[in-house]
Length: 379
Image (tube, rainbow, N blue to C red; front, side):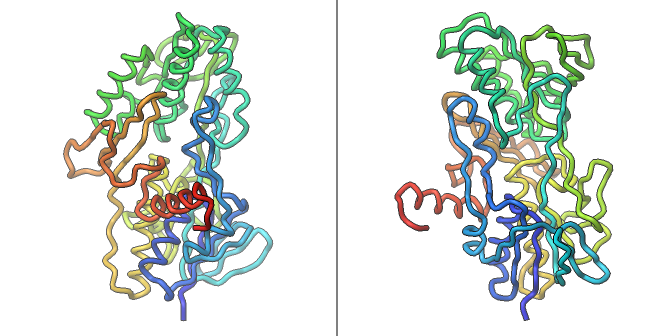
C-alpha cells in the first residue's frame, strides 16, 4: 500500500519535495500537493520586471504536479490532527495521511510606514514610477532597504544596481542611490570574501551603503534610521516584512515560523515536516527551500523503510546577483565546519546556469520545461 504524503503549498519547496520523493520512493508513495493558487510563480525574476529586464515565469500547477509524480488539488490545508493523523482542508474535508510536508510559505506584510514596498509578485506600478522618475531626473535620491536581517537581502542590492544602470543609460547625473541595511556588511551571509567583493562592486558603481542600520519610518522626505537621526531622500523602496503562514496543529514561534530539526522534521511532532519560507531558518531563499525539501524527502523515504540514508540539512547558499551588466554568482556555506568558502564570480560554481534558484531536482526540471516552451514543443 502506498504511503500518502500531503504537501501544503505550491511553491519551490513543494515541487522539489515531490520530485525528490518521486526519485527516491517512486510508486511506494502518493504525493498530493494542495495550493489555493493554481499558478507556480518563479519569483526571483520579479526583481527585473520594473526595469524591463525580466518577466516572472508562470506555470500551471495542474500541469507541473503530474510531471513531478504528484497530484494537485486547488485548495488548502488549514490544520492537522497529529493524534488522528488527519489533515483538515478549508472546505472541511478530513484527509488521512501518512506524512505531511508544510510548505505554505511566508506572508508578505507592510514593512515601513511611508515607503514603497517591493512585493515581488504583485503589481509593481509604484516601483516603475520610481524608475521613470529616476530616468527623467525627477528623483535625485532614493534609498533601498529591508526591515530585518532575517530575510533575503539580495533583491535590495539588485534593485539599487539596476536603478544605477537605468540612470546611467538615461545620462542623468548627480543621483544618489543608497542601500540602508541591518546587515553588518552587504550580503554578509555568503561569507567575508564574497561580502567584501560585493562592497567593492557597489562602491565602483557609486551606490552608497549604510550597514548595521535599521529603517524606522519615512515621512515628509525624511527616513528615520537607528542608529542615527534621519536621511533626507526623495523616495524609499523597501522589501516586505515576513511572517509564517499558520497551519492549525503545527507549533510555531512568535513570528509564525515552524521550528524544524536538521531533517526538516517539525519539532515535537511525528510524521510532519516543513520546508521553505514557513520554517524558522532565517534565510528565506528558493535554493535553501529546495535543500530543506530534499532533507525532508530523504527522511520520509527512510521512515517508509526504503534503503535511503537521510542526510541532514547543511545549507549551501547560492545566489545570482543581477547588476545591470554581467551577473555575479555568489556561494557560501551557512553551516559550521566548512571554513571560509564564499565565492563571488562571473561564472557559476555550479553546473546549472539558467535561473536564479539552484535546486537538485527543480532546476533541471524547470530548465527542461522552459527549453520546450522556447522550442514550441511539449516537454
